[in-house]
Length: 297
Image (cartoon, rainbow, N blue to C red):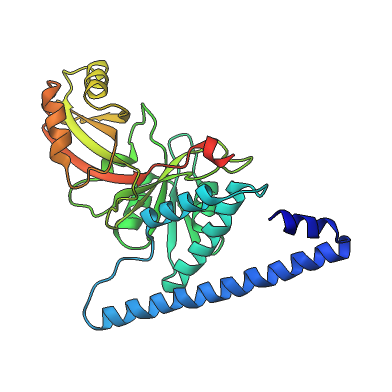
């Protein structure tokens, strides 16, 4: 490496630009090669389907998370990690589109805020983004197959109709990712956070959090609920709550460290040990823990 830098130091401007041109051509050749492999994956899936088998949908957020973490951990030099991730985001989104073009549903919260920048950065410049005025409309597009994924703003306390209450047991739609995953957009939307929803299987990325909706009696104060859940599970957080106007129940959205999608009984036991008696408890999603900002520097 030292010899390589010494050689560069001996080149004039034309020589350095020639090096860049050669590297660019190599990068493009690798992108062409990568695309052929992606097309081969698509062809393989087509054969599996033709033979009566089933395949996973192209969008695999847990796999993408593992790819991004590897990129960041092995990166060195001055090139910004946020920009590095964005290069791969575009390649992954373009490759996924080759397998099956898809639409991204976007909704606004009560204040009119949306996650357009996060959606575009995460799903690339080619996939169509359709904006909806209400969470219910965007959620309906997911359930009806008019959109493959949806990007919803991070829940806020006090919302009249929070979108996460739509994640019922009859729906296949779940929370599958949290945005931004690595690095934030600069400027408009810089402080925005959101969740990706889709009707896909939940997968363990190796470092995840699970979302539960718990039904509790309104007689239990939220201060008590927060304390008991915090005492029961380190690192847990309450993201929202919504009162059922037709009963004495309150629905609470709880964010728990770990991948518990097949182990809801563990969380149920923890609540019981803390003296909480939920009428119901269900997993409504899981997501890969985003890369910490310190790791992106």
